[in-house]
Image (tube, rainbow, N blue to C red; front, side, top):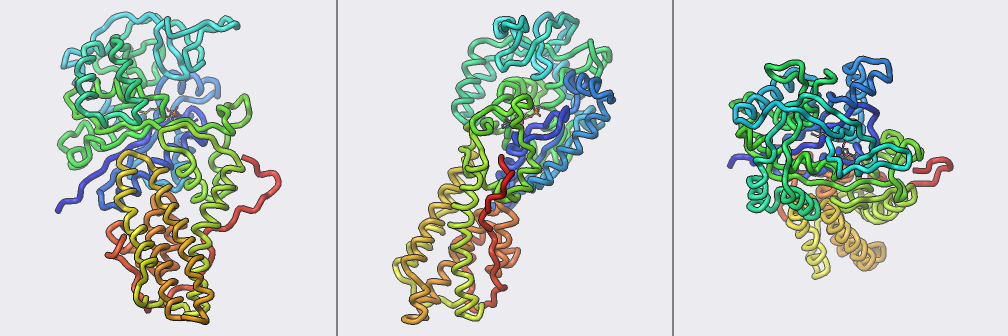
Length: 518
Ligand code: ME8
């Protein structure tokens, strides 16, 4: 049987500044989704990177007295450090200033032009440098300070220049038909509904080149124009798997993408413009676009002026990597906005990790160490209680698969932690520390069952907490080739009689430290 593939992407980030917690969140979530599919037997390709062209980059570089590429080099390196710091393991990191990406963008442009979808005209309208986006006058408002702004609040400037246009208006019906016949194309539903009503409202042709600055990919055949940064940015998703070499093994293997993970701020680009460009160029469309929500610090928007922008590197330093990954994936329903605070993080660390999973593992493993010479017991006859709790753990995979198929990471974790709670009730109810004197054989069975529960919980927690789950599996003596989802359930049951390493705590409690406040 051939291994199914799974290709997923993050947005490529603007390296006009250093990464913040919102970027870390996107990368953590996408890495979690990637690891889940890999453990579930798929051949995963996971792409992330930086979006380095455009007026915003050029202006930021000018202010800093740097060449745009020097700014991009500096901050792209910071994004690469972020990817490593959050424990992500992408297959590739793309930079849009790379030659391979220039070739790819030129080719998609040529294909769209050959298809008759690009024409030269004059653009006159409002542009937001911060969003790298054109706006209709009716979408903008003038504030009391006399500054005209787009709906998200960034200033817009009047632009009047010769520009190439993409015939987006010609794609309205085809896009609507695609949304209709592929109900999973955009998630969550709110985002899908927004897109459909936007497209139903009518599409205007899109200005796709600029002449008043030059930090971009020159338009083939007319180099006084550079491509609109979003045309080149979206194209990264095909460059990353080998475009324009459509005959390459990687393009044939991985395209179309299974999933583009994005923030809800960039849905229109991904769900309207990108499929229209691909339809025009005769390239298959991605299977799904999923938009997550925004993160707020104690419910407030993060902004430099409010001074509540949290550095993801220091957050990881304070709480530890896996606790941070776990917090965001468990706390924030994926697809909705979410809030974080020092208290909320500490609460998750201490309740879900230290008390619930950590204690379950620590108590059962240290009883095995103390009372059974560190040898995993061979279970005796199973009681109904044993069978029931094992069945709960054995039943988790289909629940988690269904949740991950629609990117509901928090639901999968919710289901796993329900079993953690049941396992704790089981352990407390069976009270193996009392059985030690009255019925040592039964004690051994209870400890075996508990260890087996921890094994399955640890295997399923690997996508979110790769290192800590790995440590738990080490403590249970699970070999590295028995840690994927094929080993869940009966198939991979722990084998009694083996010697276990000396147990140590995997999930320490967070102890308050004055001065560390998220
Ligand atoms: O938009 N909460 O790049 P970008 C959650 N280059 N996620 C957040 C966030 C927040 N407060 N702030 C940012 C761009 N993000 C383009 C993308 S793709 C072809 C080009 C995340 O650096 C979120 O995923 O502004 C958002 O979509 C992404 O960072 C945008 O990063």
